[in-house]
Length: 361
Image 1: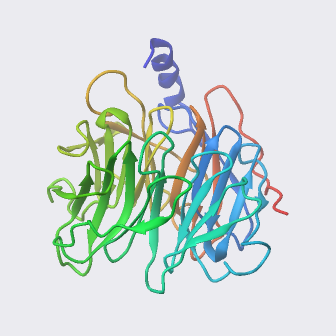
Image 2 (image 1 turned 90 degrees about the vertical axis):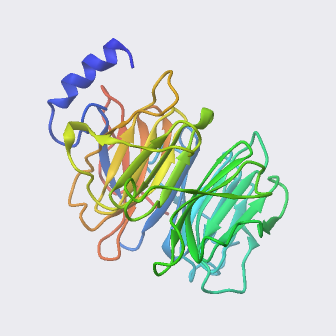
Image 3 (image 1 turned 180 degrees about the vertical axis):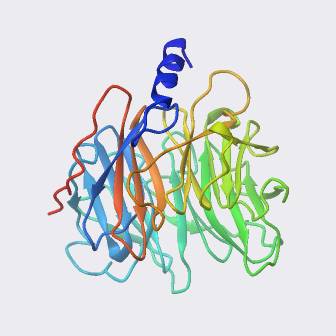
C-alpha cells in the first residue's frame, strides 16, 4: 500500500454515508425489480458481467452493471423456470458455466446468446452450490454441492465427470464453495446433522486424490463455509463467526481481525478472490468485508475492512462479489422477503451511477 493511498484512506475514514472504512469504495444500489433475486455474479472482463439467480434468471451487463439484459433461457424456452441457479464462473467473455439445483450445469460459448445443458442428474435433491473455472491449467472447472458431490471438467471443451475420489470418510457433508488454483483444489466441507467433521478437502493433483484438512473449532466454531485462493497459496476462508487467512494453501490458518476492533456481523457464507489481489468475505444481513492485497509476505492481510451497503440490508444475503478492476466491483444480494439488489462500487474520487432501476428487457 503506497503512502498516498494510506493518506487517502485516512481522509475517507472520516466520511460518512455509503463509504466503507479506509478502502474508500462507495456502493450504489441498482434495483433489478421485484421478481429478480440474483445469487451469484461473474465479471470476466471490464464492463461485461453475468448474474444468475432464482427461477432460471440469467442477466448480462456490458456497461459495468448500469443496465442489464435478460439472456436466452435455454433457447427461448421456459425450461429453466423451475431451477434456482446458484453459481457462475466465466473464464472469458464468451464462455460461462452455471450451476443450480437438481444437479444442473449450463454452459454458453457465445457470450450468452444461447445456453446448453451439460449435466443434469436424476437426483432432484442434489443442489450444486459453487463452480470455479480457470484457463491456464487443468482441471478447467470444478463444481461442488450437497451430499459429497464434486464434478470436474478437465478441459473447457470436454465433459463433466463426477469425481468419486473425494473422501467420504469425513461423513455426510455438503460442499459449499471451491477454490481452484492451477492443479490445486480446496473444497469447504460442512457436515450434515452434526455428523462427520468440518474442514477442507484438498487435492494437489487436479482431483485424482483428496486429503482432509481439519480446521480447529477454536478458529471456526461452526465450520468453514467459504473458501477462495490466490496464487502463492494465499487463501481466505469464512463461516459463521469465522474469518481466516492462510499463506500456505490452507495448511495453517490465522484469524483475521475487523478494522476498528468490531465483531464480525452476519453469518459469513462465501469468499471471492478478485484479480487485483483482494479477497471479499460475504454472507447474511448484508455482511461484506474486504481484505485488501498485500505485497510480500506469505499470508493475505489479516485486517478485514467492513463495507457499508446502503439501505436496510438486514433481510439481504450477499451471494457473491466480482470485480472488473480495482475499486470497481459488483455485489449481488437476494432475499425471500424483499427484492434483490445489485450493488455497484466506485473507486475513490469517482461517482457511481444513479441508483435508479436499470433497464431489463
